[in-house]
Length: 208
Image (cartoon, rainbow, N blue to C red; front, side, top):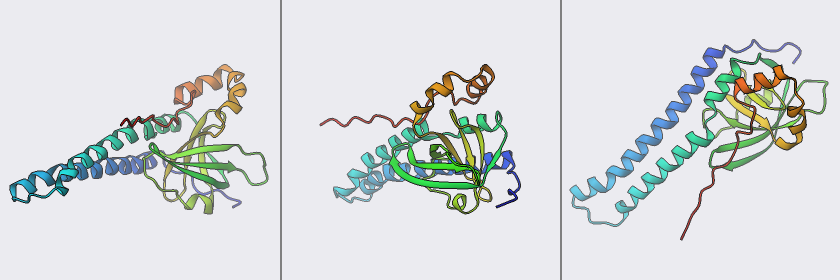
């Protein structure tokens, strides 16, 4: 693609992803309420069965996973800070190398490159709205990037306005570059909230 698409409207991108995030929260809360209500309704209806009793624990699991996703997987706020700190740059090619299911969300290994240039770093990407879905439009037409590849940033998919938070897949590999970065570069990373590694899977202990 010789001519990049029109740069996305940041306000519209944030609105789109905020809506997806709120929808995710609402649907999980509604599901939890329904599951909590099933045993009560069953008792009032005189249905003396064991199955409704499992609904309350299931509702608790839904709420626990929701809290984990929002606490460890939601990257909306940091993406908003990045977009207000760094300019958008168009990357002509997006390559998805791998994906992993994690509690915090589906984490993708991607490369954002410019046609004719080589050596693009591998990045770990997670959907800012907590949606477990890879935007296939990215591989068809590139993406917009805002940030600093040594620290992290935001990838925006043209057309769909899907927003993914990215950081180096090998965080330690760029440790020296971050340490030797000039004060202005480090200050921008601090301002955007990407000066440290954010993608950390929560530890869930299961005891018998």
